Length: 489
Image (cartoon, rainbow, N blue to C red; front, side):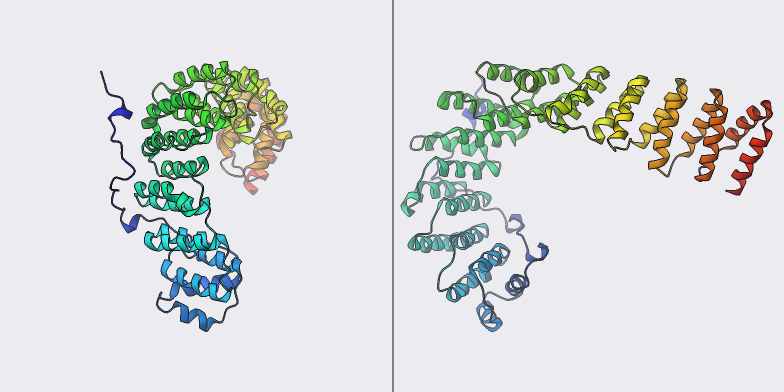
């Protein structure tokens, strides 16, 4: 019997030796005061002083600057000085003397975070002990500690910090557990988070958020996360049962599933099972699922998800982007009737067509030679002040002329020249010759004159064909006037 991935992977005891820290080059890119627009001048000056003065000299420089600061100023300077931890800590001490040691809890937490993110862990714990004496410690402090250890590749120490936090007067409850799990999963270590949950749940009961965090972690691991997501989902159902309010967990689980092998088929099975228990995923899953359906031109599966989550279940409010995906899918599968119904339905569900909606449908209606339907979409689009793509207009003029609809071709041409100035010659010449071939010679001459005035070049072939027709109708003078205008341009 084949061993499962969960069983075969190495389980790490929380007190085993941790992996070495990654090199300094892999440390986070810290925010800089130079990247912040409209920063108050006093904050900018203090940040510049910290960035350009050595740690040994910073306190003297601050004394010489004779700056008056507020607790809020301290927070802002610390927030933008992560790249200079030694100077930032000395600034914090110096400012404490100015403020009679009345730092805000947020300033203290920034110091803890700043030290942790720079891997000065001994100094970080010294700051935590000082905060404990002041009665300022909170879960936010330890959340920072968890994150700092995890990104330094020291997950064991993050777990140890969680296990000793009650010694510092901070409750070790499910919210704290979720904070730890989140830090571990954010760093792509969902396996470690799941492994530790098996230990932690002996003294802290996980809740729906705990599993939602793990599901989101598995989702971020692509194909590799599918097995883990299924295993965690099964555990969640056993531990906390089915809950219609647990949408984030269902959302992330199905998002992980749908991107894996046979993902759409797997997702259908689980959505069916969830529906029987009146539990549904959120709008994020529907978007991901529709993306996958478009990728595989799978209109049938898209209709299933849409019916379950939007039409029958009415549990989700689809966005314009989702409607566009459905319209695109129907169009690619040649079902422009369903695509048109989607367009008509959007407004009644609180989603409004955008330029992409109209362009997509107009393109495929033209391509399918559904000329009257295309014209209706074009009219609605222009009425709503959206501009069709130039390529769509070029194609529409040609298709309308070929289909014996000169008035519709002219309508699109007018829109084209009102909104675009370049690459018009080919369509212009095609329209003039087309109107002439459809026995609309007056219109051909009228629009030829307008094109000349706009600086659009008519080819010698187009002018020659016009001349033949006008000579035949004994209207050489019309052609001569047209030629004169052409030469004058």
